[in-house]
Length: 328
Image (cartoon, rainbow, N blue to C red; front, side):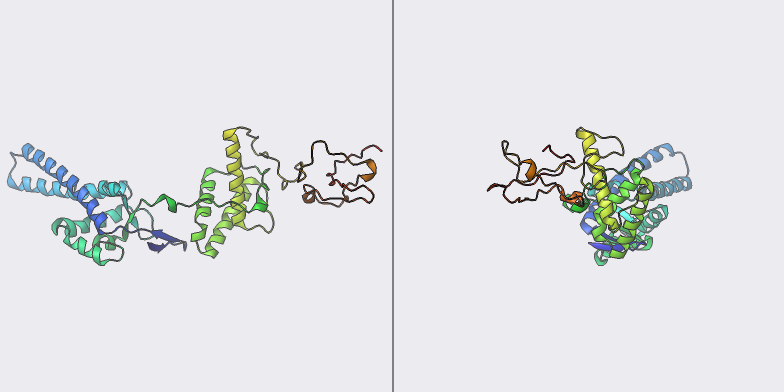
């Protein structure tokens, strides 16, 4: 592992490619390049047989520079660091900060590679890769690039953490239709990598993303909720709605996909636990004791045994208030 720090103070863990994998990728590239070079040279010799020696020498030099130097530079520039050999070996050329390379990086690598690879048959490149801690040759040192392994084990891929249980379902009535896909992708990338970020940098990124979500949805974030927990709850809500749309029972856009006790105005359907027997005797009118008016909705789903003096040896648990008084 090689830890690189970007301009935003984000630590990137990259796997630098070592000499064996780089040598195999270079061998594949050289076999393809020299095959194309020999085919083009034979074709040009047959087509320019009537020219003098000076013209033939100029054409030979131009062919060498174009096929063995210009074509690899163009391929690395257009493919963002993936040549044919690197693509086969799962390698890629990136900048020192982890970003994709540009034409100037590929040009410097190709120009230095003429000396250390083509003219010296790769001896200097091998020595430089063995000495370097990250396996870089001279072309990478001068260009400010690094060859990394692009294929990583699937077990190391990040996952979106679940929101806290006390936030599950709280945003069931939030309108998420105005949040663009790019913002969702940025939130998912932050949630999967927030454990790798510096705490202060991660907190600042979470606050900016949460502010963008609040601006898109038009609803303020709950007071006292950490921005990372807010983002995780919103992503969980979106995943729940997408799953309900896919497997049936899709609600209207912006509506609540399911009844939640945390949503304001959501109807409560408490079930006493343990459930009563099907033929349990009902209490009489004198034993009915509805809960006080100051009881909160959070206390409604739980059945608290209510003991009435003189009601007999078997006391029934108190049923939740329905708003109606049974007749006397």
